[in-house]
Length: 68
Image (cartoon, rainbow, N blue to C red; front, side, top):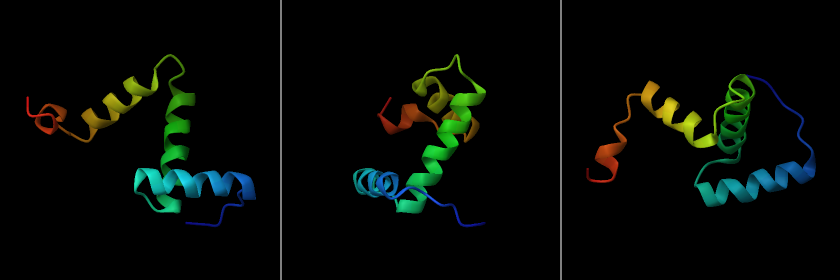
């Protein structure tokens, strides 16, 4: 673990997004970093496709979440 220097304006946007997404500021930044890395590694996939694959890898049964 280390310290990452983040522009003050970007930090403010992370702070605002973290409150909407009910995450800590660090968790929100980590989430965006992970999604960004996955998007760069898989440029043909949409955000939805990336999330679907991550849910599958984590063995999340999304059908149970929606009562199906």
